[in-house]
Length: 241
Length: 119
Image 1 (cartoon, one colour):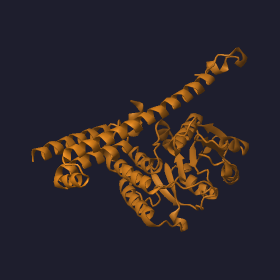
Image 2: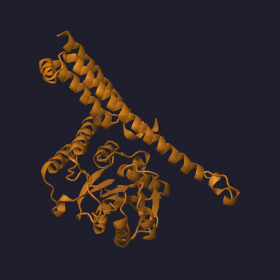
Image 3: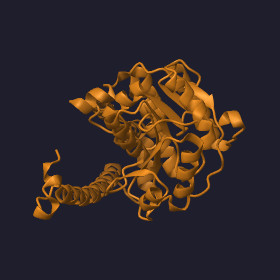
Image 4: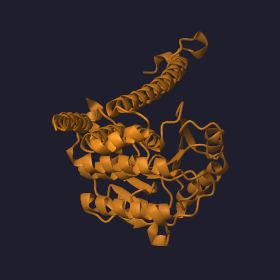
């Protein structure tokens, strides 16, 4: 696929991904031929400079604010520049850029506002407590948004102009909220959500975030997020007041 | 019996405050997890007083409530400590932000005023 300047923006949130970011930017630029923005979330390893060298635009956070904040910054940039669609891709290389067009098609033909790429379609397996957690999230979120979402924590997503306008105001920044809560926010804002299968690889670099105590805390926190979501003020409204 | 009722109703007030602040997005979900835990802990201690007294005795504390005071004091000290660490981190961030903004807004004849004019 190929897009004229300022039509589609690929947003790559990156934190200390100097080993992979160059390769990923190049891959996205060849597979999609769209504008690429790397949001460097306060890296200390020269990720931003490497991304710039590979031909991406770069916005740098002065300190680490979290993936969600990086996506939010990217979407606000897309809104400012009037992009018609955004594709969010991980800078660690686990998302196969050639699957990105499958996510962009429904967004560009106007049939969906937020398209989530699911890793499970390509035979990705997780085990243990993590699998249980992901199945639970899938069930709850699918019921809330009225569309089957198998991979609620996937960070491989496409946003329409409508979604860009909504999320440019406020995007959930906490870890896991940037994926799961964003789906609930999107549904409440009247955005149409879809899921499409994509290819995900094991990561080329970087490390997975885990730790048992922390995972438990994150799960409890997410439970509070999900249970209270229908009762709370809408995020955009809270951001405006 | 009276004590149980007092503790449980105070926990209920705490839950109501958590609920309302959470609803208005004044309280973060992470802090909500902590405070819900505190409320549940208080109820548990009030209901299972014999168990708590037993723990106190086996820890060598003859009067149960004084152990409770000690536990609560330690919890509050840890909480204060973590909050002061967070304030320190926020102060550092404000300084970084103020400096980056100042550099961007500087009025320097060499810059032909461009940076100052933006905004």
